[in-house]
Amino acid sequence: MRLFTYFAVILAWALTSSSAALAQGQLTPVITVNDKVVTRYELNQRMRLLELFRTPGDLNEVAREGLIEDRLKQQEMDRVGLQMDPASLETAMNDFAARANMTLPQFTNVLAQNNVDVETLRDFVAVGVAWRDYVRARFSREVTITDADIERALQAQGTQPTQIEVLLSEIIIAPPPDRQVQAAQAAREISQMRSYADFEAAARQVSALPSRENGGRLGWLPISNYPPQLQQILLDLALGEVTEPIEIPNAIALFQKRGMREAPRAVQTPVSIDYAAYYIPGGQSDAARRTAADVKNNVDTCDDLYGIARNQPSEMLDRLVVAPSEISSDVALELARLDPGEVSYNLTRDNGETLVFLMMCARNQAGSDTVDTAAVRNQLTSQRLAGLADALVADLRASAVITSR
Image (cartoon, rainbow, N blue to C red; front, side, top):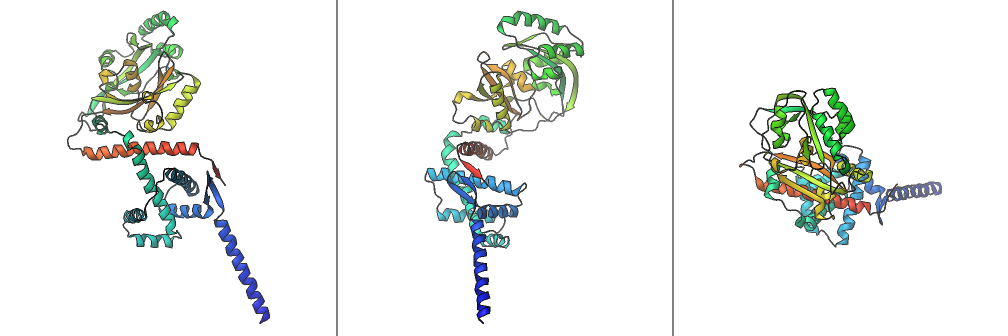
């Protein structure tokens, strides 16, 4: 009996020690965000929750990134004294379960079957809902959706089954002030060329645009992409013929026609062009172009530029919706090559001291009278707020001290 009691005590001690060690391991910090820790338990729970939601990707990485952002958001809300009351949180939990066509008890039962603590879901929902309310309260005055914003969002399909497309090569000569006479002479000589090979060689030698690397050759583009004052000139060119030199701000443009076709395209000629111009100090310097490349890598739509330009002077970003005929010739030629969401940074302003980051937002067709404009306005508001929120999280992350184990 004494021997049995001895082994029972040893076994109980071993089980207790094992449980304590396991608990200690679960409470081990795996991430520190400023002075707030994320434990192994929280990370494992978030991964199980993501697995239940069928989240794609590396769940460990997705969970870590999500928990880091949650800590940053919570610290920001703590800074301003924002707290979510229990009744609102309970409503949010029920709404979350309802999106899965379940009651909250049913949903928590599914969580338990998958070894997810209900507190994990509660924390996930609380941060998300509180952050949404905080973003709306903080940025609502910065987001104004105009009728022009709604107009450009309404991309109505046109009725024309085909339209004319042209295949061109380009040369843009951008001489310094002391070389303008020589540039004009070179442009006149190029305008007399009829050989594709000669024009391509000239493009590689004198053109200021990146297209010089492939002899100035452009792909097929709708004639409506080009400035209205240039369209008829391009249509009248014979194959191989080059335009007369075209004066544009600080440069001379020439185009050689390589082809023309009628192509299926169910869009109308745009009534207005929506584009953005973000101005970067430094002109064509390496530093300015690196900044432009970084911006390009961090934006998908023109709305994203509002987050990039946040906390900067308002004149750093222009968002314009204008008739094609009202766009300056150099900007119009750059935009002609771009589809919505594409960018260029070939132009400068202020005597070459400022680099222009151009982004095509939309080519607007005639609007539709049956569209729910209130729904469009709400959608645009949400998109703008999301861009500002993402920029705020990026700022918080940049100034935070984050360690990961």
